[in-house]
Image 1 (cartoon, rainbow, N blue to C red):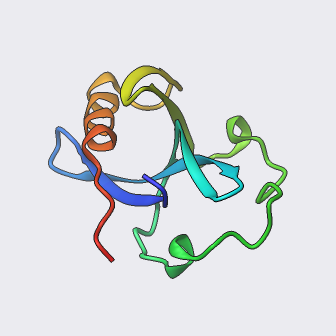
Image 2: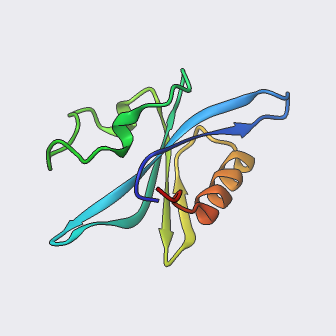
Length: 112
């Protein structure tokens, strides 16, 4: 996954929890590559945005607010060689974590 993805997690009551999965990338001489780290944020409006597919405007951080202080931060997945290593966070249930782990593992970039 090279761009953030919006998705929903089915809930037991029939509702959905809207989330954004943001991959953390490393910059190399010839572009970017995945680090295997994916940060999960609440997606309150579930609004598609064109900004996710545009190149970054700068190489610096997007803001100064640490994830742990961001009210939309739900946690972080760390994958090693394509397999889940661990999840850091306390908001998502084990079922939600499992759902997102499978989603991330099976994600394929859309053909453009």
